[in-house]
Image (cartoon, rainbow, N blue to C red; front, top):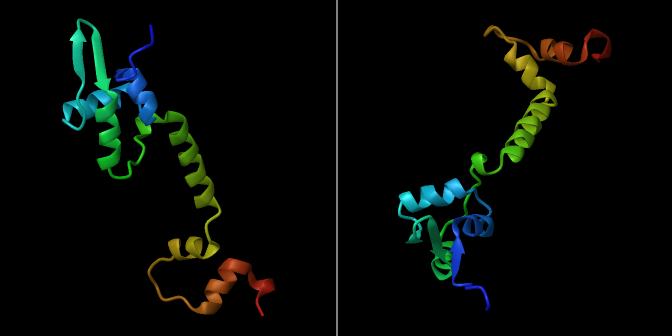
Length: 116
């Protein structure tokens, strides 16, 4: 007997969309998709409704809860980028609010010996 491909389990629906099962349940609670309770402990999503949901859904940004490893990667990337930021930002961030000349900025960035 061939498996019924018209119905997906909640986990299969989550895998199909690349999200966590909790996201599927949250979307059902928000009435974005429908979960059918076929029997005690048996919840299914209609494949056709899931495909219609995909067609009408805007581009979805991943929920960090769905991709915890990606969240760590993004944090590390942001940290590295902030460390490699343009040195002028460090100078500007350390200013006291008093006027500063271009020469003072150059000196702060490049040191006295490298100034022209």
